[in-house]
Length: 603
Image (cartoon, rainbow, N blue to C red; front, side, top):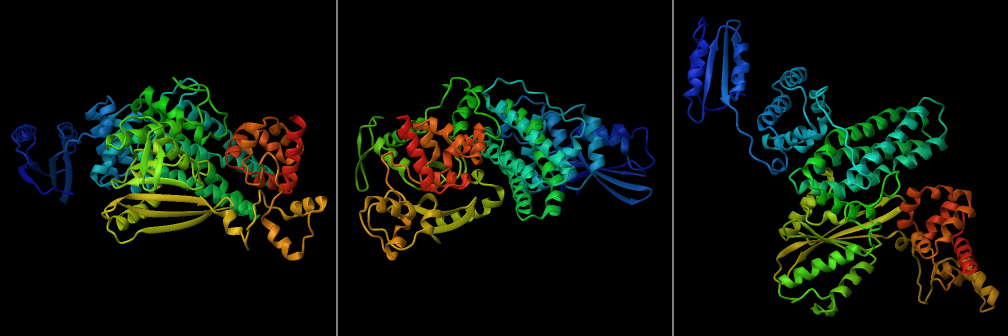
């Protein structure tokens, strides 16, 4: 489209020998906000490259077969963006790449012409050059939605010239870990390709999909660890664009698994090609663009810090990697506690509440007196997952509780809350903040079912005594068990199976249980000296009694999958004994009894 500026008109019809000199002089004499309007009796292709090299864009109008009007306008210089401060790149090359992409996306040139122009202009384009151009495009009206939807077309422009050097990194380096996971994921894809050509055997596919679903751990670590670090350097496209592509992969895996579980064999097999293609496509984007760019943008100190939070989220189809940098072999489980104490102390000191960082200092809180250590312990033991976003829409805090619903890591602190959600959810997040900020609403609640759990989420507006908006408090809780409760429980109890409770009472001849009592005993379990109940996390048991891990393997062949260290590591943080018993085909009290007996034997 022709820009609305002043044009110096040069009529070059039938003028050939002195025409080039006229153009050169006109360019030299141009004032700000001026361009050149050329009229020729043929389309002046020879001029295009010359004017482009001088920094001009063009717009062509064809009046008839013997009259062309070409408008040359000075190209706007790329505004400096934060990401560029960390990369040593050729600005002229970046500008050229960006304009080819922009002209294609704006419909000014075809895909074939864009590819041709890119190949004629450059022998190769690096991942870093590709990535920074993505950042610049947003300055010219290209939305994140459009980038996500047209990413395959954009990559096609660089076919054959986008280069990526193989990264050689030591074990334990976070990027090496991602690359190792890519190798493991590709192994699953290879097995899927083989099975796709054979007669469907459901169990074989079920095992592969159990493995493939671990890709969610890969994505979660990227979203909570790598993306925040890149945002700090001004590279926010992974958070906004790749996150959407990752959600698309989650959705198609869920869809395919739904077909399999419903025994819709034809639909299941027909979708496998798309599943494999989408996952492989993501792996290519990571290897060719994301990881090389991350290596250039981030410092070794960034990666050392990143490694500290990786273990909390876990790993995809690989064993826990070794430490990196100045990390010790095993990150202390209370490291986040210490960081939280430190951060709280600094904030309190800044506002004159605390004159030192002593954890023993008693503070006047709203109702009572607490030390920093006590405040942190309270947050840690709340059976609800809390996070706080301040009035500037920055994530400032989340509770370090074992009851966490979704994975988090320290990398989330200091991020814009919009970058902590998939693009599809950002509109809802912003609407909640807007309504809270304007005083229209004070509360928003949601609930969802995930993996057999019922999750309740509530957002509350945080206001000071003057009623001023000070942020948003998010509270999440797994309320699956709460929803199942009925009647009343007025007596102390330690677990919840009526059969075991009845048997225990019968053996001890303590009382006769009538029918009404049986109903009330639905929520009563037998007490044991180890305080092991159906809600006990298996990882807590194994941590205290390591031999129980091997005992489970021997107890039932259905526990054999737990021999996989990755599966066991993942399960150990979230799986209760009730969940484990269902997997092994035991009544939960039967399993608890066997575990207690084994502990008694080994004591």
